[in-house]
Image 1 (cartoon, rainbow, N blue to C red):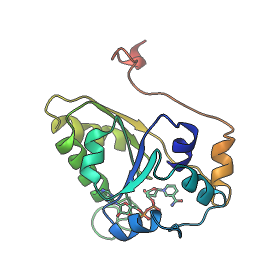
Image 2: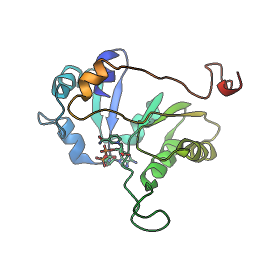
Image 3: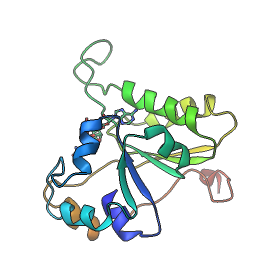
Image 4: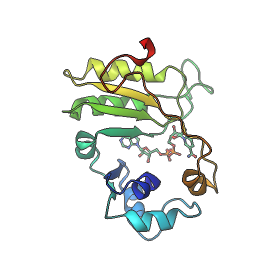
Length: 174
Ligand SMILES: NC(=O)c1ccc[n+]([C@@H]2O[C@H](COP(=O)([O-])OP(=O)(O)OC[C@H]3O[C@@H](n4cnc5c(N)ncnc54)[C@H](O)[C@@H]3O)[C@@H](O)[C@H]2O)c1
């Protein structure tokens, strides 16, 4: 998100987390993760068009695009224990997005989730949505630790696509 903020100065980027300590660290001089080049990027954008906040619902309500990268730990009990991803956090994030949204949004799934999760999430969002339109995109993360910033500056490919055209038609039928 920091690189998006740097490269798209006209876009406001709000990074939100319910964990107050993490957000405090992102707003401090000592960022909670080390990645070469990240400090510089954050320092250039923070307070301008990159903000770190615990006001999750407020920023989700205001956003046009929501990237979701909540934790998806491996299930420890029940069906798929030891193998399958636990989608509890994702599901509760999807319910919250549906609850607080007053305008249509693109929701981008960035967490590591099983194939077809987008369809399940779409159901949660559209069943709770009071007529608001959500388009769900899948954007799994393939960044390599140590070169993440460089790789984002020089991507060897960019894939963009969704199910619908800007006019709202189903692109898979055209
Ligand atoms: N770390 C990586 O390099 C990496 C790479 C590729 C994919 N992923 C995937 O990205 C996802 C996140 O990874 P991570 O390492 O950042 O996990 P993490 O556990 O460090 O961070 C997840 C954060 O989500 C927050 N959160 C949970 N529910 C929330 C909600 N409803 N609203 C706001 N915040 C909420 C938590 O407080 C936590 O800080 C996982 O699915 C992971 O598999 C991670």
